[in-house]
Image 1: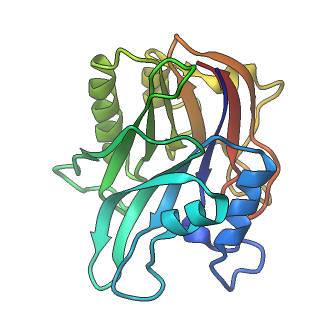
Image 2 (image 1 turned 30 degrees about the horizontal axis):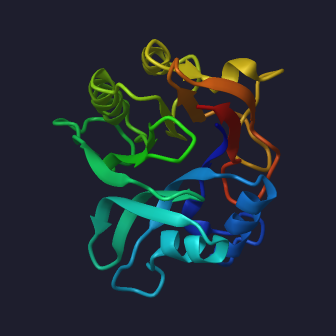
Length: 240
């Protein structure tokens, strides 16, 4: 079965061009433009205690007529939950949040934030059962090390075909990216030329990824020049 995947850090729907509003209709327009079947989202807000924190995954799903699941990584006091989400044209059989441990020592001069991996399982008629993993790794190296260790441990027991995608805050030459590439195929290998994902208007680095298991065939992958949020979306057409 052929499916169109998208990985997108939406910066909680912040309009990167106008820089004065949150507008999820812009996100929905991008998803429609590329006719995406399954979308992994990073930097998504959930229902909180202030108006700016509302169920953004549900809002997007309602706009698109999709199924959804929001997986909070952290709940900010006096604001609300924040994390990853999945949107899908197809029903989600099961979903859960896998916590990523915080570093025991925080000795880097950077911002720390609790992270997680969203796991979603699918059983679509006419397709093999498969699993999708979505994550947004931290800025600190110790956070990313814990994230990769958590992911690799999860993959040890992964028997079905799977897709892993998200903003990993690492460039392709990072040894931790190589550790993932030893377990999963990086869809970027079929790019005709190196493509960058951040920032969307004048990208200088690639920190967004989509990996697939060896059971999956990749027909097309791209990071199109879309300037809506601060990241560009990552898209791939795959066969499961």
